[in-house]
Amino acid sequence: MNLKEIQNLIKFVAKSGASEVKLEMDDVKITIKTGEGDTTKETIVQQIPMAGMPQQPVQTQPAPAESQPVEENKNDNATADDRNYITVKSPIIGTFYRKPSPDKPAFVEVGDSIKEGDVLCTIEAMKLFNEIESEVSGKIVKVLVDDSTPVEFDQPLFLVDPS
Image (cartoon, rainbow, N blue to C red; front, side, top):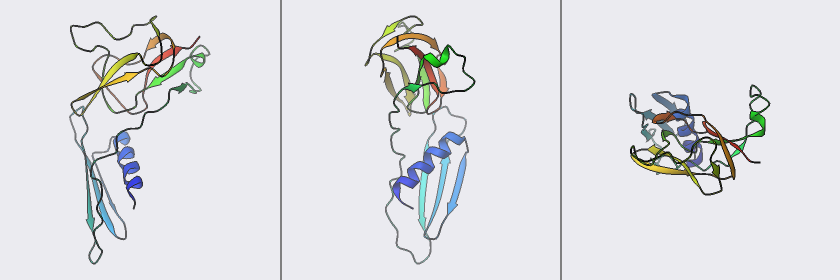
């Protein structure tokens, strides 16, 4: 099992919500555990060589989430109006915040015009605050997530009207 396959397995387990997954193959045994009862998920990976097999070094931390390009909403259940909007999705798992701090105003409000590079929100993951920047220009039509709530990878956050 190569590093890319292990990273994909970690992402799959994180998205599934499972607390522990064990996988045994010919030459390796992998256990993936995620933290329970905490909004921040910590993933632990162990690779244990089976008897008689040489041990191969493996990266024990999941790869950072790749930035997903913003794409049009292709949900069949979406209304006709929503199909004209671009959906901004979460590039990582974490806690969604609309404000830079509790005493500051929100980064963006419904009706605000935005351009590429504008900060839309922050997502806290493992005690790090990641600024989520817009990859499109347009107008915020809808905020799809409440402040201070957990979000999953690829979860829709905002609807943007590009016109």
